[in-house]
Amino acid sequence: MAATSEGKAEGRRCNGRPWDGIADELWSDWRWQFRNRIRSLKKLSAVLERPVASLAAWSPVIRAYPFAVTPYYLSLLDPADPVDPLRRQCFPDPREIDPAAAGSEDPLDEEGAMPVPGLVHRYPDRCLVIATGVCALYCRHCNRKRMWRRKEPGGTRERLQTMVDYIARTPQLREVIVSGGDPLLLSERLLDWFLGALRAIPHVEVLRIGSRAPVTLPMRVTPGLCAMLQRHRPLWLNTQFNHPRELTPEAAAACERLLMAGIPVSNQSVLLKGINDDYETMRALLYGLERISVRPYYLFQCDPVRGTDHFRAEIWNGMGIMERLWRNLSGLCLPRYVLDCPGGRGKIPLQPISLLPEGEAGKHSFDKTGRMD
Ligand SMILES: *Cc1c(COP(=O)(O)O)cnc(C)c1O
Ligand code: SF4
Image 1: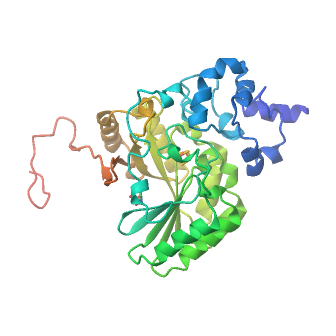
Image 2: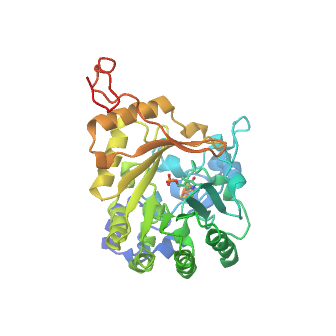
Image 3: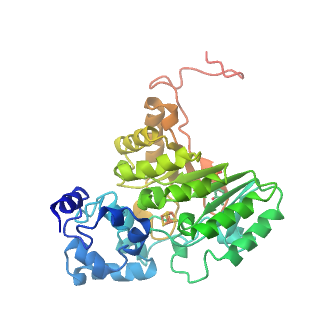
């Protein structure tokens, strides 16, 4: 292999990995990235340079909840460090299938709020479409991980047409959130058709896409895809950066292509214990997002999905972090910290109650107009 490509491979910190020395054209080709995802323990053991037998404890975990990570995302993490914040988001953990684990696989009762299969209608004016069950990388903390092992036809035209029909006959719906899974992994033609069909409904004013592709497979955000999405504006895209190390040049370029196409990019992080539940990490993430013009939108309290307890931070800890962020960061950097209520009662903001300067709380009162004495 040529010295130059070796040097580049080193730059990606993927020496000795199965794709060592891969040409840049392939590395930056999302189809190559998708096809070469690491999905088996055999392939992972080669990456980790550990015998397959030593990964035996992960075998039942990935049978219950499939495993997949893109070479790109894998190149960002330290595979040997069990507490690496990126590794923990994608490597299996036996705690996911702990038989003593409490909770439901669908604590938000999304299945109970589906007037037609795959469409969650919880708020009067907007609904969420689960357009596919496929993701580039399966996040171990995902609140829809129950869907990964389903064999049902996700993302077929018939299924999407049923949703279009429901939305067309429900005039109070003014916004449709196309989520998943990752809708950017649908075929471009099918996604184009679906967005066009939604756009053709007179009462649908706004479209939104939920996709983690800018983080896990940024090369998917091609100029061609952006040109297609641009035709369906007003269209907003929400993604999920959880850690400042995910803000790579590739990810920033993907967001830039979307922004230049007139698609505002917002971020919904999940507060994850040991990954981003400390002030310094969260501040670095929010500063980094503002630098690449991505607006922090939500910080989610991790939903009580069965087998994700090890990811869940204390709400009071989250509130403490939020309070410090409010005191110190620009308003453009501040997400809203929210809890999605179990049972499907919707999201509620978790606001720090006192925003008075430290030591001032209790010294003042407000009159009805909000004037402080
Ligand atoms: C989160 C969510 C939405 C969108 O809510 P916003 O507050 O507008 O981001 C819509 N439908 C469902 C079912 C949701 O869970
Ligand atoms: S990208 Fe989203 S839907 Fe897919 S596994 Fe991650 S959190 Fe779940």
